[in-house]
View 1: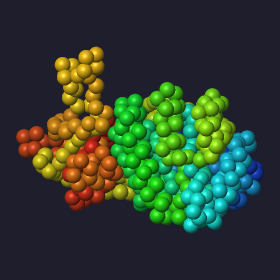
View 2: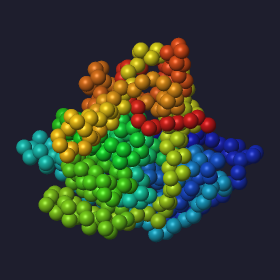
View 3: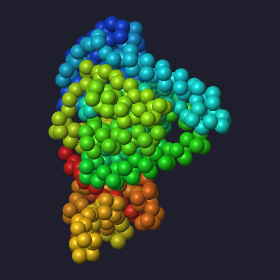
View 4: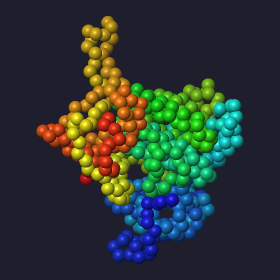
Length: 441
């Protein structure tokens, strides 16, 4: 599989490069690393075996990690790591929750095997593999655990489906989206989730409070598509899914968690690092005997991220979409006429006047209303989603082909300039607008 760093000889570590150091790891310990905010980090596995996010490190191959990345190298039997001595922080920990995590994986493996053996049975539930949803507060390690469970399953030959409902950061595609993709190989520790076959729906904002009704509709739409895919693919059905969620768990956030558990018919709920949430979910789900709620310890290596860090991370995700992790992609600038595009936002729109409503009723904006957007200078620096819809009435139920970034609006000439990942015509004239912006630095 492709790793983020090239295989380099010793000569690459000389000259102006930072000094190198070796770190020896005892069995069942991990090296926790925060990459410097301004510099990348090169390291390699010298001897032994080790893994990152559940994916085994290739022996002797140099891996290059981008600035700001936080990760841990875990070894079951012992290993030696050679790395540049230029990290923000790095330290070895011998107390980790990995034993409990791999025990969960073993239970899921058993359920997948039983589901595969039941394929073709009259009992549809018997042929359904585990549907795991990972929940917990912000910075509990949900996405990391999700990657581990997916990579361990892929290593055993399964092709589980990864579902990402975290619109705040986005593990599969850009923030502001919910998405799903099959995982056919252990996840690359540098490059992350592969993007060959993602199913993406555009919410357009990094918090569901903007339009919770739309969020619920998109979650339901994604779940229905996956159900249809599973119905026709026994292998995917047996492999099941791993669902990553937001760290928003109070009030509306908790309601949306229950909605996701019900909509995706989750059978295993993994609660990371919060007794209260675990107790609430056990109580709420006690009428569903086929749903297991399991509390797991969060890793001590999880680092709290403030709002500024999250904003920087979102900008970085957008930049990577257009330019690649290592600036190895060449996006294409194009110009279109205003008349060639139809831009919409979802939610809001004109409220009905009070005189047209029943007595005592308050005017409320329609959260599912499709509102045309006038093209003007306000669109500058917005990231728009390109819908697969061919007709206007298909927009709400259609997934996303990709994204463009608006770089210039020429009002007199009625021309719009945008950056796209590749040249050629857009798959559709229908574009969706949210609050996703990016300013190239």
